[in-house]
Length: 121
Image (cartoon, rainbow, N blue to C red):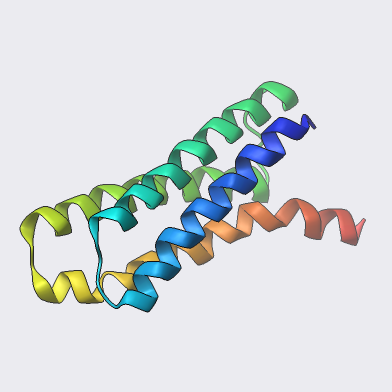
């Protein structure tokens, strides 16, 4: 695989992790967290597009399907974060991290699955 796609996907992991865990530790969703969610989404989508080109399209296996689900969830996560920030609902701002951590954990499945499959082979 092209190493630049790996660097871009790993950048997505770094950005998304910073956004999710800094929000969790702060105990309140802030606009800059949304910025990191968005950077994670952009880099993940960009890297995934590069990987699609490398392998010739979508693969309908655990990695491909969970990867698609993860990108959709990241998009929903970013949109919902923007809605919560715009509404300024204090309870939602303080509890949003539960959704963030859940999406992050799901995102880790397609990130790490190639490594697990390689170790099992």
